[in-house]
Length: 308
Length: 314
Image (cartoon, rainbow over all chains, first blue to last red; front, side, top):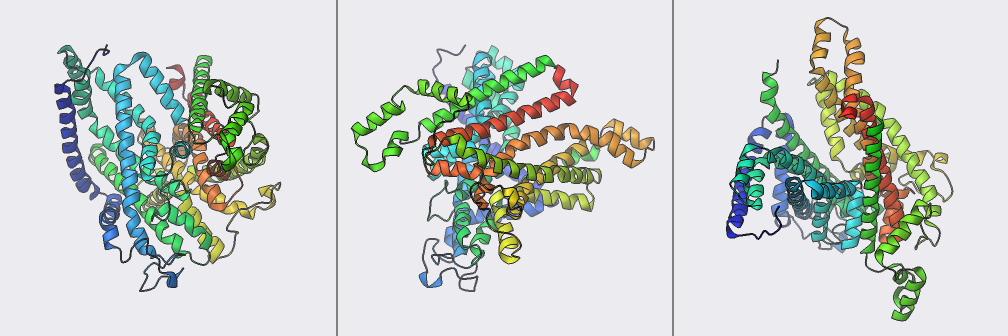
């Protein structure tokens, strides 16, 4: 069906246009999130928490009172004080500064991983669903196989074979998230494929990439937005868990999971070393979950209002 | 029903085949093989080649795959590179410990979560419901290592009620020292409870909005009867499959929880296998975990089909 096909210039325009409509959709989504989130209690709590974390992610290193890697050897394992607001760790590094500087890496890695997973899942799911037949069957069986691993185990296996670096963690999250997203995108594509506007594009003799990117993809943004909101908190959970197991970002980076893992030896003498990053990662995930829950509730509210 | 069973069973076999190939492929690309591992730094190219030949590592990958999966099917999981013992011998007691932990977590969380879920769902949007819902959202948001560390700080270091780590003498059962089980079980329970409770609550709310429940309310049936006769049986249907899926989900949590508490189960063993690049051990553990996951998913499917004829027939 699409064997001897070469991508021509018009197709790239289609891809860019799809990207353009994607950016428009993202801007609109962000605006919607703000207005919708403020309608529910969950969103009103979640939004400021997420915003604080985002500010830390962007400016944390700059706002932090000390350098995250700077050793203050005369202040080892000190309890919180005016000089070190959240205390110091075993090398005398300021915990507050480390937590603030660590926000960027965990949020960046999780967001990039979730987006990569969505991109991969979309391509595989849409391609497989659009192609149909044997290819679809085989691709979906493989996806089922990958999904037969608990995601943490899959991530550990992939990461072990790749090695430990931020890029590989992003890749791992992307690979682990690809199968469930591809299933969702596949069923969405199957539903859209039979619609008249797709059929007529095919009748007009439009090339396959045009149909996929320009006709089908723009109709899936709402599905993708929901997926992204679900995946984001999973990604943070996964990335910080990998850090905790020592397979994520390597020391001396101020990675929250890693900081908690390193603090275990001094848990009795210096619990603050663990509590600060634990609080940070907990509030980040709670914030994201509250925000997405709030938006979801708010979107359903008018519907429920009309229900008898 | 027989057809439904046959289709599901053949699918699971196919899935397990894909799973075993993935495990083999992933462990295959690990840098350094078993021969390299054994000889370490002192390896000369000649001795490496000789050892590879004697271990059968010079054969093509697909031959080794069939060799591995063939012996695994007969119960021979190979020899651990780190422990220098048959893998099955090392895994056996560890698996027993993990299963005990899983059973405790499951038995505690499932009934309490279902009861709380029904309770909250029936009182939708009341103060109690909102409180439980927010708490459960916090519950699913907290990573296991955060809850675990919090429990250690509170119960082990501040209150000094329970031991902070669950280290066991080799050859002893955790049941002889129940105190070491408390914190790991509690940590596993947290996420599980929150997740099952949320699903139960959502299902109860769905059922509450159906016409038959409205009819039951309008014809004046006592609320107790409506809850036990109309709502619970119908809300349980999707909840049961959620619970079965969660058995698999717990396995991921197991890896974290066992490492937080140094509990000697398969989760902590997995990390040891990864760090020490013990490939046969890693393969065997991955296979066990993935198989349990697949089987619990199958169980979820089957229970759903068994309880809901609409799924079974279509």
